[in-house]
Image (cartoon, rainbow, N blue to C red):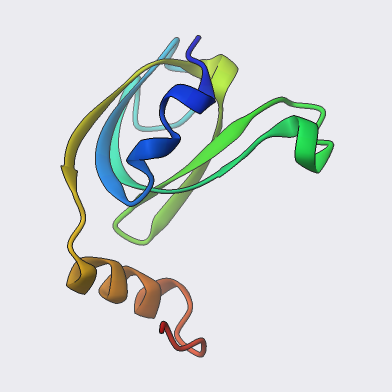
Length: 96
């Protein structure tokens, strides 16, 4: 299991996430996508624990830290890429 605070610096990066087992998501134990959000359970009260969100080209995954074996940063998303993702996911909300 990882510590979420060690990876918050990779927000808005493309990452490869390796899960502890293949029962967490349909795609298997490894996914790649945009790390676009996180939540500390102490702040939100989420009983499942700390979590993060990976956007796989329009398909979002909320993953609990307890299910993650490792996160590998691949590359930082450009401003244009982030704007495109925002437009797909939130088409009525402008991005400043």
